[in-house]
Length: 398
Image (cartoon, rainbow, N blue to C red; front, top):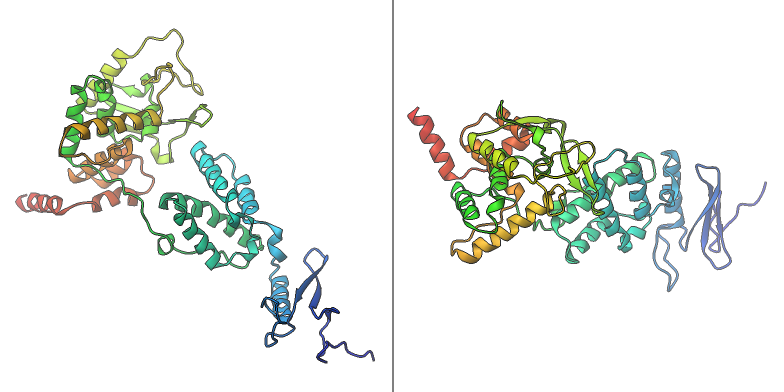
């Protein structure tokens, strides 16, 4: 019978354990691929002290137990040797047929991770505290809440994929973001009817900005998403039935490539009713539209209502700039300032106005193109006391 191997303290070593001449312990095991691997520690047992000058780490037998548990659960050792950046790249590479804006967001997040030391960490080494500390660092570095929300929105499902692939034991990003970083994002509020009237009254009175009045009036009174609005063609305007066909949206990539995409959700495909005033705006736009020798064609679509100085379709960025400059001029003239107004604020304002007017939530959901009724119903919760009192009085008098 062979003599049992012992360490320099005369303790019996288990199968696979050994002690090197320098006193460090080693454990040899076979991984899931059948390859031999080693782990090391200066301590055999959890009660051992680390040698002077050596950092304290889990003992060899603590590491052994974790390895055996991982092998039993078929967890790939060392997280498959993937770094955080490599994991996110792999996750994104598996996404096919994603929208232009979605892919742009993926690349935005990747560029952030590439610049961070955190991106070089091995995924199985990332603890909950590491994940939280990194997001806090991003905010301290000046990243806004919405940016951090986007980052977490990509990295959390990437780690979830690693969990499903048995590369890690837990997803370290499974926590509420608001409990870790401060939500400093500005909520895009609907403006009041009085503010809307003041803004719309100012535009046609201004020599430079008056040409944008019809488009801005339409945004305030249809609830269209700005990308849907920019994608409108002459054939989408149905004067006979007083409706706007919405079945696509126009985007422009960073390389200035124009892209036609489906609506944001399947519910986004809809017909939006037009008031007489909105119809009049469209008639003026079509009548005043430049006659081109050759119309721009984007993915089979032509006859776009709004063209820029290069005779190409206007995109969201154009209208966001127009709104910004109009608002700046208004606030430079009048003492009573208007809040931030953007194309999305127009959409939110339209939705709020319809809700306050008593429109049925399901009808409003259809007009807005909301996939989920909860998004529409959320508008009904953004009421103030004056709204509640007016509604109460209306019901009481009825």
